[in-house]
Image (cartoon, rainbow, N blue to C red; front, side, top):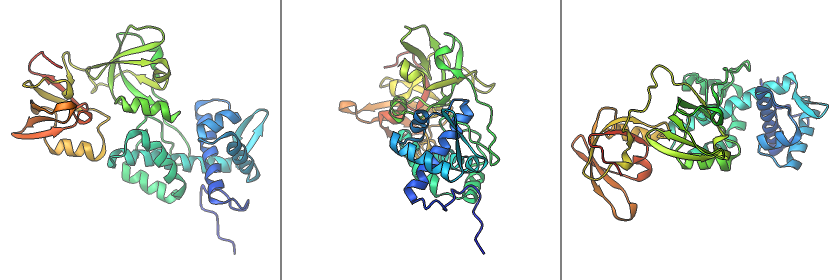
Length: 324
């Protein structure tokens, strides 16, 4: 008697090797992304979303079609019922894995997507369900991308394009597109993440200027186009006037901690909280290192050295007006 195929697996009857099977799963996930976005699933679009080159993408589509997982209609592609089942499992595995990495790992944000790409193909449907239960059934991943339920339904998308957001209106970043990876890495390198509060200020057409969690940021249009935003929720008040990053507090000044920013994740977030960088704590900037090395801050009677990348993640309200 033949063993039944597990739910959401690529059929092996086509003699697909490991790499070929993973490429098929990548292109099926890209098809599901196009379906969610209501975009035509052309070969170029699928290759870009799946991270495959043209030749590999075409081969993956041909294998998916032969396995009964994808169909070609006119100049676009679509999922069969069996293909959509696989695509949902892989997308859930990818976005739940990214969520787990963000919460528990010190891996840089620009590397989350690539690491999840490596792990998503190894998870069975049962393992995906266990991961979702462990994480508490999140609705969105760290980029703000929706995580489909087991039956393939998606939460409603949040927000609108940052470039269409009116100047002066407070907002919150709801989603940052992680494709293409090179552009997402630029945003992550500047410390810009989903969940951050902002107000847009008037700027030139080719740029987008924000006051983002106490700091001015000018984004070129190519980066701003990756960002979706929404109105703040009731518990997401505006950034208080005069607030700044701890890295900008001048030596000798004191401040009160307002929050750790959304970019402070995993083990680093836990460490800062354990050291006393919690809302309401009083911080004093006592020492600076030469050549932009770590700075020393006194919190709860203890002197703590932080790199600038760490102190950038702490929003404070200075007790004095002078900031660096």
